[in-house]
Amino acid sequence: MLKNWTINTFLLVSFLCSATGQNEGGAPGIFNGMSFTENLQPDPNQVCGMSNPNGLVANVKVPKDYSTPGQFPWVVALFSQGKYFGAGSLIAPEVVLTAASIVVGKTDAEIVVRAGEWNTGQRSEFLPSEDRPVARVVQHREFSYLLGANNIALLFLANPFELKSHIRTICLPSQGRSFDQKRCLVTGWGKVAFNDENYSNIQKKIELPMINRAQCQDQLRNTRLGVSFDLPASLICAGGEKDAGDCLGDGGSALFCPMEADPSRYEQAGIVNWGIGCQEENVPAVYTNVEMFRDWIYEHMAQNSNSVPFAAGQLPSNYKQE
Ligand SMILES: *[C@@H]1O[C@H](CO)[C@@H](O)[C@H](O)[C@H]1NC(C)=O
Image 1 (cartoon, rainbow, N blue to C red):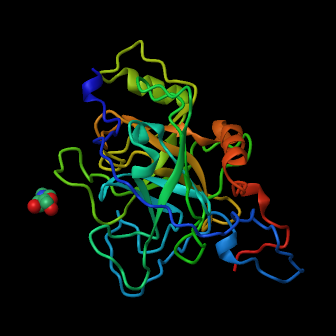
Image 2 (spheres, rainbow, N blue to C red):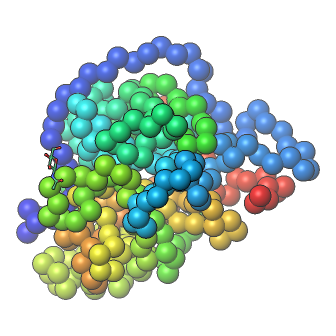
């Protein structure tokens, strides 16, 4: 049974990176060191979850199932020995949220994080991507490969990214936030279809309905998982629409949802975990429930970095959508 699962995992390779010794002294929290007066808009780069709805490069025509360049600036691609192996999301200038399943077996030093990326097959001169070596990987101690429980990891970078229009952070969900019935997005460079030979060079954009856990468990019991399958408590579900779903190589990618108050801003609901096949009707895929791991994220960021995550509820009261 297990061999048919599409939990995304990749070859163990070694890639040594030398950490350059920039002395940035860590990155500030969301509004640290900034003061706002009544009519001043905060710098959009310092506000979490701020997308660029029309992208940042003029005259790029992309099909509907792909992001435009710079559209979702928190999305990072992960490389090992020059090869793409999964994705993650920037939750602070030097911290990436991803899945434990894709970093298992890799040494910290072999993982390179690339932010500001759109087409992995080409370097853009308009929106140059930036690479950072990883200084430390923290995986959840209770990660279980078998059912994907607690499938979460943080990558602490040797040097923070400088936030700019195409490199920004995503918001963590506020406490108790539920995404049931919402339509959300997954982006990544995984395969477009299960039988594809290669990963996608262009960043894919997949729109998915969130599926409640009871319905999800019922639908997954109709698959080869069988009637005794129990959905682990740390997982949420999305998808189940024909020809719209994440696939091999999307592991670790963020599942993110528009905020009610401002649909051009997003908060991260999930982390791509596993699925049965790809894009099959009535077969949702499962995601790590990020809201459940807020405390774990805060705790490990406090231990390993100088910044706090950017959370959805932290906007100043004078913030207004432009
Ligand atoms: C997959 O990638 C290889 C190597 O770049 C290339 O030769 C091959 O044509 C690609 N396959 C498809 C179906 O695009």
